[in-house]
Image (cartoon, rainbow, N blue to C red):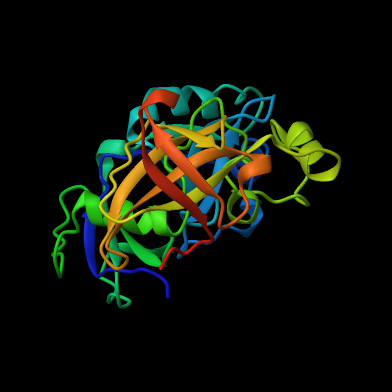
Length: 290
């Protein structure tokens, strides 16, 4: 049974950009891993910005704004870097990128489908592993939230239960999309060329990654921590990246990268700060964890 919640979270701090102009669609499709031609106004499309070597530079959400513009949001801490990256190749294109971070609030709602508010854009979005809705609210426009504000700990538990990576934890400039298991979520292998496409497509067709993101469940009363090393038998095979208490399982749960030969569901790993201080036992499970 999938893990869920009802309530809302304020994501207004996320970096937000408006790309507009006759060439906006073509240009953005050459910068991101998903097919922007399929983007719509009432849904947020998850995608990635990658380097020429196929490594992740940012995870983003994209939706249309009218007939010739796109709203893009990404991690708050990447506001400057993401703007520079998205603007870097705008040379002869008839398109303009504007930072609109301060012009819109972004409230994400989980639970039953909320009613649309007049003058406020509502779009479907899956940001934590389960369906939700974004409200994109112009600055100065009143918006009344309903239900409780969801604590970060609860959202982390949901995200981990569904195996969804987060920037700053599982996602960084050292990660390939396939390592984070983002093929079905963020990659389109038929859209044509984009920066990083050659490497990412080669991994799909003739190669494979050496590690994979795994969801794990700790034994009762054990408390692994982010940063713990993971061992299988006498070999170091990975590292924990995120942990959260799963109330449905009454256990600590975790995400982490594990070497490919030790990722089978049911594999039991030991975790700790070093091989001499292994204090937790984690079992790799398929998602969702509950």
